Length: 386
Image (tube, rainbow, N blue to C red; front, side, top):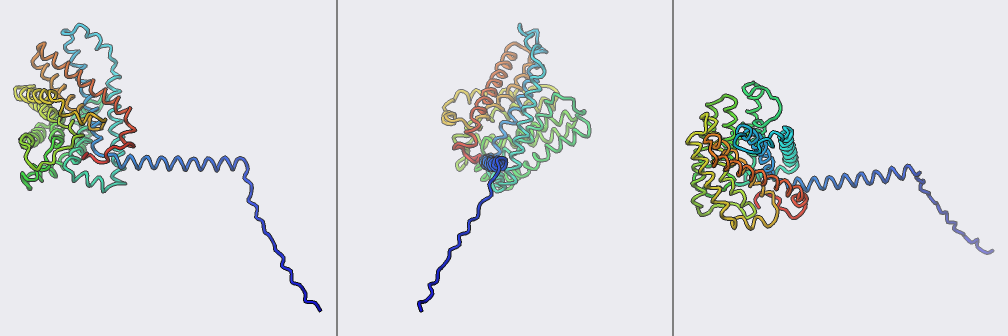
């Protein structure tokens, strides 16, 4: 008998994928695009937070000081309208212009503070390194400085300066300044000139300027003793710092070429000191005038040496905003001087410096707007030190 042939049968199983309806296809594509947008947004946020640093607060306190200058300058020209042929043009300036500038400064401060809060949350290690750096720590005074300047220039109706609400708000802004003072000045005192000669750089003057702004604002609160305390604390350390920077001791870290514009802070410190002492004394007296003359001399010394800033001006950098704030404070001091002296030369000087300050700030705003992409996404330094 022939053996039975075994036949193998192959069974093929075909599983068909369910066909998506048109609506399902649209929803799926939309979800994919949404995820892609979210991922791109997260990437941009991460890049911004990595490259963002405390030095960007230069923009906020420069705009806040500019708002104070506009408010002071408009009032100055109105008070001296008999000296100007075209004083009616000032009356045509709408009050909304000053309000708009103040609002822009406030919005910039809130935006930068929000970004820095996110940086503290996601990149605390970088914030810690900034706190320990001899340049970066000085820009931590900037948020409090900006807030105090905004209080002086608010176009809206606020509670009385001697009310409990304003006093509490003042302390909220000043306590961080005092804490940073204890950290910085305490190190200078306990570790001596070796530390100071190593870490001293022009940005150290921001700590002094912050104390002077707080002292000037304390007078508006009616606190003469606190204002004198902050003023004396600032001036004694300014004397020590100015001598240290003047000597250029060996071993000093200094600042890089890109940060050369911070040399203009040499102008801001005596200018702010003249304003603060004028508020404490009640008039722009001889001491205030001497500090103002010192700031004018330092300004002429810097502008007569353009080669000092040549390399730092080749490529736009956020450090360029270091030109605006000192020029604005010098303009405010020149206005106070002109109001006290009351002669044509002083008035002309005040208007020239104020106009220069406004032009510099406006130019920086335009340049920053056109270079915002380069600041965060194109070969920009990720720390304040470069």
